[in-house]
Image (spheres, rainbow, N blue to C red):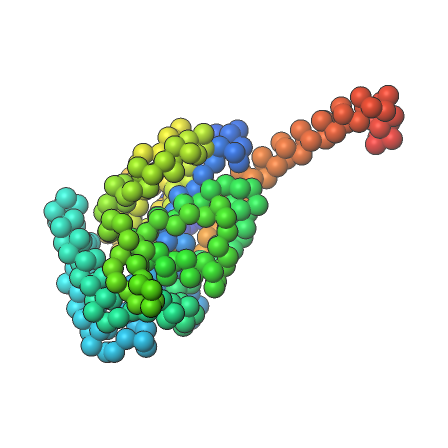
Length: 316
Ligand SMILES: [Mg+2]
């Protein structure tokens, strides 16, 4: 667990973290599920080539839109982002502004006629970059059939396209986000379902969809986010052990103490997935060792039953 000892990893209660990890090992992969935010959690805020982008940033900078679209989107961001992070406003007070921001941003996409066929190129040319190590994480979770719920206030179609083009749309992956509705000609004509913004990740239709009930036996949860609003993502899930991992990407001095009180592990300014991966590797290795031991015992027992014990002797 050397990754947890790195100087940019903070834990209020390291013993609690280890206790939870031990419970995960005990529970096995069949009890485990992962819930993660997308922008700046699975994706990185910067890499060796410079700053990276969120779903909305990628759309805002796309060459498919005229510069007036970009100016309007930028103006919205300048106005509402200050409200989103205002430390003197309660979340309850911020929510109406967030709804206003998202609604106006979506209206802009409609006004400027976003087309479905643009999305692959928008994503290809974007700087939406998965953290280093995400590929391993996605493969590993898929191999062990551990469900991964990606919960995002971004744009679901962009997230889906990012998985398709920069990784893979694995069958254990579920994306809950703002999905665009396109008409028969592939032109945007609205959004599907309820609007999801940064502060209503506990009220989405997923919480009433039966998703969590279907996997209620998976009561060991790894939750990953970069915003305090992400802490609500697992609301409604049946949960015995939850490990909350927070990426603190910005304003570290201002937010570190609050993040430490909210997340079990806080990872500061790290563009990789190496800390969560080391935990998942530890859990998986321990589980697989247990499973391998179990298989050996069963194999030997079964073989022994049909061959009068000669297998044990042969194997030895
Ligand atoms: Mg985020």
